[in-house]
Image (cartoon, rainbow, N blue to C red; front, side, top):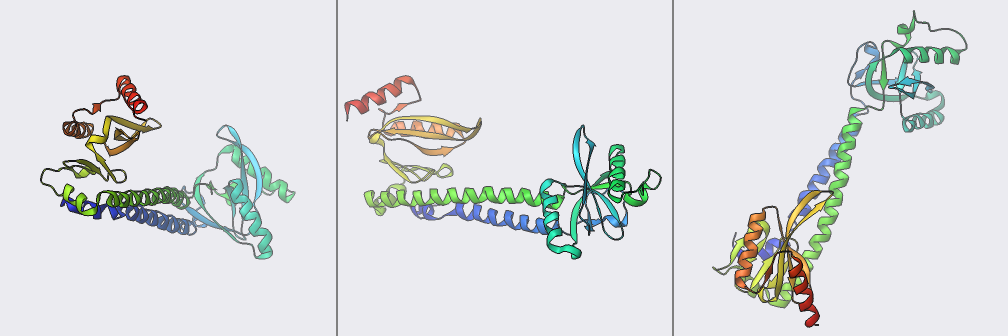
Length: 320
């Protein structure tokens, strides 16, 4: 790429297009999987004794709640069914409320589709569901001898719907990407403002002349261009800094929750601004860029030290 294209390249919102495309793809997959979750899996009525990753049922009665000990704690399960079959279900509070609302709305025409994963019915669950069903009917209908004729050997965990889980993951990724797109838009607007300010101050022809000079040292992978007179960077936004205006430089490894998000060349200028100018991950390359900048102006102080901090503060105090 010729250096004169740097100004035009800076105007192109590649990051926004990329992350917007990812946002669309993730949200599309979230929609697809959420729809698939409503119909996926085999019918549990075909075989109530085998464990499956995903099954589906239709219930036509309001689930009966009961409690039992599961995994060392008290958990709520439900009994529900249709005209032909009875089921043991595990539902969360939100799911039950949704079923209850649909039941009140539909009345005699109530029908609700549930998708989940099956697990073996354990002893506590068998006893508790047997008692709950008999109590609801007011007589002893289910015993240990005929239990499997009613409920089979497996219960359905409606909280483990793989389609909804995968769809939820894609929804989260889509929302994250949407936030990234918003950040990219804000940064893009900021970059365009900075670019237009630089063009107004230095002139487009002058900047292109500097960038296209044979002596310009280019670090395109980090967006840094060392011309005869200026450091021109579109690494973070768009900056043009005269070497004569640089007082101090150092590297800053920025972290979020102990995770490095990048290494920044920080430049403190004689007009009192201390700002990140170039960002990358190759520390040796960034150090090389700083050394080459210092060759343009040997008076630049290099490295984050207390002495350099003090010198910069003293300089600003003396040149107010």
